[in-house]
Image (cartoon, rainbow, N blue to C red; front, side, top):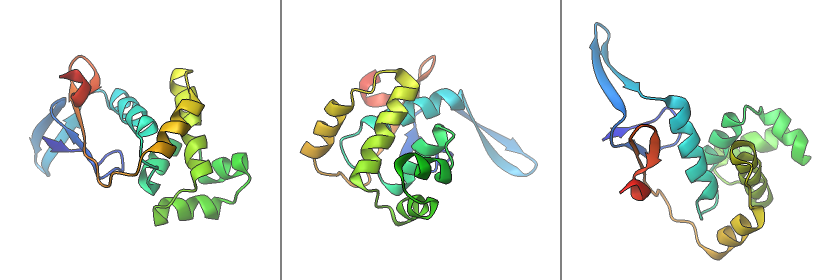
Length: 146
């Protein structure tokens, strides 16, 4: 498996969908359909039951192509506050919920925000949960692909 760090998340591992190549500068890993991979990762992150970490929040924000300043303006906070959440790894619950809904709405058109909020509130955070993905004519959650 390949530990994929291109998302900025520490817990993403790829079972396949990548090729290791040797170059004169060393080993290089080529990933199949990075955009599709990021879409699946984003969906998994947005639907997870645990609160968003700072890195997960940053990943979703960047996938939406929102700057810290723009997101801060949307929710009435400062860009310094958003930067602190991402750095300190503690995202306020309201920002967490809003980011998930915004991401799901932007990518699927089916946010189902209240269902997500109830799920988030009912379960405790599982630390360092490993996400495993596989590539079968497109990126998939390997747990659901089996």
